[in-house]
Image (tube, rainbow, N blue to C red; front, side, top):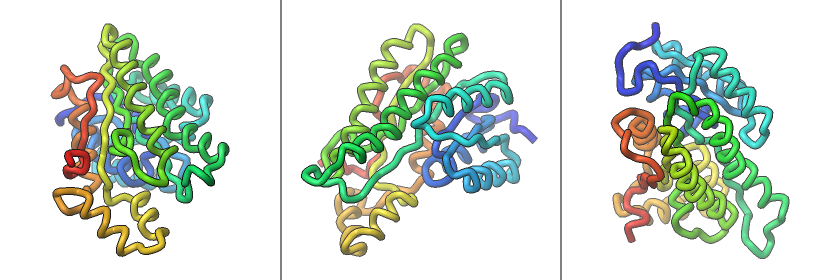
Length: 258
């Protein structure tokens, strides 16, 4: 049964990269707050499983296959959302990748372009086609950046550049689309307990040492958990943030305060 109450009740949200991690938790939180949620991901099995779990809890969820780096996939995902629910109120551009072994002196152009195609091109395409779907009614677009879109990190130049690009793309879209009542904001997590971060730690030369170093880099002395980011997504999706656009919402345990 579709929920008729909640902070985003009746809104239709598309969340990319929603099979696991931050995307999955965001989709769950939006559904619990009354939204109809379309989950998209390249991982079909995990995406379907997450959508099924949400519906099993009484939420409204639907999965669509989607590679955010492919323009035709964006057109299909937006069309599927409109066909199923008749509108799009919220777009969460969450899908992203990180890659190991990206030191600048050994960096390849192919790896650089792969990173940009998902982390930056994917956000551009989401804004392009999501904004078109919201043009008549207005809406909220939430772009997942990172603290590494604000500060540098050795061995992650391409990732930093992609996430930094998301910041100014967000601000430009916010200014351009303010007259349409389309709000565009970015979210900047610190290091969060997700499969992506867990993999990076596990594949490092000294996993225990790397984990301890990451924890020590946050004044709150721990890594974040997905719910803490998903709660921010719900806030930006809701009317509670109706006077926010072009903003950078930093949720990093104090990482960038130092």
